[in-house]
Length: 318
Image (tube, rainbow, N blue to C red; front, side, top):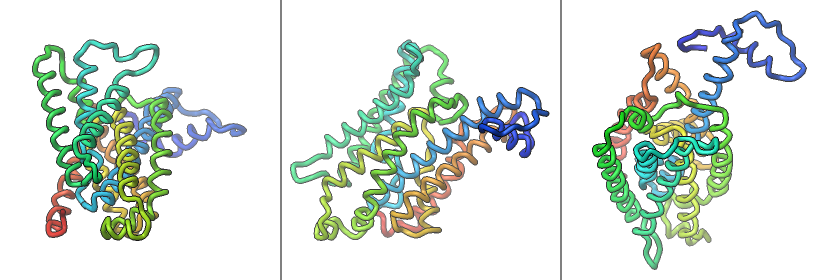
């Protein structure tokens, strides 16, 4: 496996199989390789796979819900809210770990959920929640929380490198426990979105058509927005802000498997996980022995892809 220490594929496979019961393999590799794989690289791969899947499922959900090919998981303020929560923890002097529990992911999660809740409250009307109004409210809340976070950073004296590194995304501190925390959110979110995949197909025409075939459009909006927001906030709380994964993976899946959400949701999750694992591999090897934030790599790939989508769909964007 590639990294600052290169481990041959056959050795990596052998080390992996030594953890399986009833399998005995002669140990003829350095003990440090076990630590490198099981304590550093495998937790990192697992977390990147789960975060990529979460962001991709959220992106596909938002694109279907808003009927906008440029929608992504950060559309209605979850990223900026999470960033504000993380910034407050970094700069307030609150211990990063209390009773063995990391506070940063909790603060980021609360910040992300709080921002989206505020946007939804602003956009809500007695007759329903117009999606265009929700997007505008999300942009406003996002701008406000970003401004507050910037003011806090400008007024502080401590070294800002940790918070800036988190804001650009990465898995340098990945642990198995983080994947275990994230997995229930992803399983629950995937199940809910996949259950609504037929309804999402119906909503691609018009909300009026979906209502005419028995879909409770307003209830569907609430459930899917909440689900996509929760899994995005959970993912961001461990990885930091990683852009464009929720844009690139769903569109790639759509090109290969079509627009049926029964196929699009699982394939987006698979492609998003693989895309983020590969991006993380590039991030930690391209300037070895140092490493880049993975958000830089996904932006280098995703920004041109976004421009391509913008040009191709400019006549259809609502």
